[in-house]
Picture 1 (tube, rainbow over the protein chains, first blue to last red):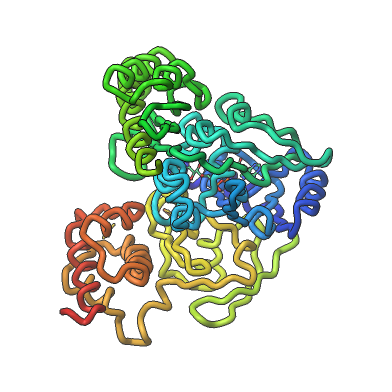
Picture 2 (cartoon, rainbow over the protein chains, first blue to last red; picture 1 turned 60 degrees about the horizontal axis):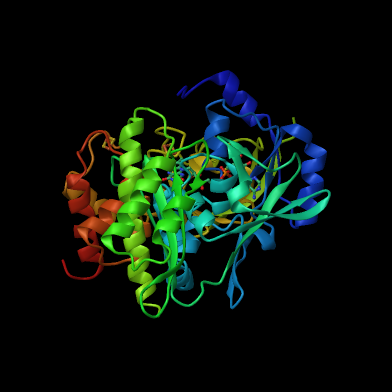
Length: 301
Length: 159
Ligand SMILES: Cc1cc2nc3c(=O)[nH]c(=O)nc-3n(C[C@H](O)[C@H](O)[C@H](O)COP(=O)(O)OP(=O)(O)OC[C@H]3O[C@@H](n4cnc5c(N)ncnc54)[C@H](O)[C@@H]3O)c2cc1C
Ligand code: FES
Ligand code: FES
C-alpha cells in the first residue's frame, strides 16, 4: 500500500465536505455533487480507500448529522437501525444483545475499539465487501434496506442489496437511510461466527450466520443460513436451512446442513486460505453457528 | 481553494482552525494546532498511534475528516497529564519500561484511559482485546499490559 504519495494526498485534500441535516438535504447535496460525490459514514473503508488512491471523492456527504440515520429504535415491530449508528453504540445496547445476539456479535467483530467508535452497519453493507461481517446476519434476519434518492424512498431486501464485490443496487445519488428487521418470533434466535487466522483485527476467511425458530418441543420450525467470504457476495444457503427445518438439531441434521454449506460455497484461493479449506470451514462454522442459535432459542421458549 | 472554518473543543478549551475539507483530523492536530503528541503510524486505521477521543469515543484521527469535528469535543494525549504531573497511566508506562521508541505510546495511553474509564478493573484478556488496535513494534506488548493492569490497580486505590 502506498503510504505517502503526494499526488494522491493532495487530491484528497482538494475535496469538498458537506454535512446535511436531513435526508432531503442529503439527496440535494448528492444530486449537486454528481458522480464524484460520495457518502461518508464512519470513513473506516472510504477514507482508507481515498488515502490509498482506490477512490477519489470530490465531495464528501457526511450522513452523521442526520437524526434519521443516527437513530436506533427497537419496538414491538422490530428494529429500525439508522445507517450511520456507530458499531460501539449498537453492541453496547442491551436490547440488541437480547433480541439479535448474532447480528450484535457480528457488529462487535468489526475492527478494533477505535474502528468500532466509527464503523457503521450501513457502511459495512454499502462498501460491498464479500467478507463484510454484518451482511450474513442481515440476510438471515430478513433485513429490509430503506433507500432514499431523488425519486423518493424504496425498499430492497438485504439479500438483493449487494450485487458483486464492491457493487450494490444503489443508483447514483441514492443512499441507505436505515435497515429494518422484524421482531424475533417466540423461540427464535440467531448466531454469527467467523473464522480468522488471528483472534482480532482480520478479515473473515469464512463467516456463517444462522437464524432459527424452535417450537416448544425443540423441533426446528424455521431456519435461515448465510455465508460470507465464500462467493462474490454473501449468500443464503437454502439447502442448509431445509436440512435444519423439521429436525431437532440432532447431529445428523447438523451434518446435512454442513454438507449443504460445503456444496454452496464457491470460494477462491488466496493468502487467507485455499478454496477447499474455506469450504470445509464453511461446513464447520455452519454447524457451530446452528448449535449456538439453537441453544439461545431453547432459552426463549 | 476555500478553506473550512472549524470551531471545536480540544482538551476542555475552545479551538478554532482553518483546514482543507479533505484534511484528516490527524493532520490538523499536528500541523494546524501544533498538537504533535498524536502520532501517525499507518494512516489507514491499523496501528492506533493516532488515537484520540471524539465526543467520548476512542477513534483513529487518521480516519476522521477535520470538518467533521465542528462543534464536537476532542481529547488528545496533551490533555492527559496535569501540567507537569504525569497521569498514573503515564507513570506506570515509565515504571514498567512499557516503551522504547515511543511512537505508539500516546495512542496506547489515550486508549488505556478510555478503557479504564469504562472498565476500572479489566482482566488481562479484556485489556488485550481493547488494545488490539494499537500496534507496537518495539516492546512485545507484555510490558504494556503489565503497566496498564498496574495503573488500573493504582487508580482503584489498590496499589
Ligand atoms: C483496521 C480495520 C479493521 C477492519 N475490520 C473489519 C472487520 O473485522 N470486519 C468487517 O466487516 N470490516 C472491517 N473493516 C472495514 C470497515 O471498518 C467496515 O466495513 C465498516 O463497517 C465500514 O463502515 P463505515 O461507516 O466506516 O463506512 P464508510 O467508510 O463511511 O463507507 C463505506 C462505503 O459505503 C458507502 N456508504 C456508507 N454509508 C452509506 C449509506 N448510508 N448509503 C450509501 N452508501 C454508504 C460509502 O460511500 C463507502 O463507499 C475494517 C477496517 C479497518 C480500517
Ligand atoms: S495512523 Fe491512524 S491508525 Fe495508524
Ligand atoms: S515503543 Fe516503539 S512502537 Fe511501541
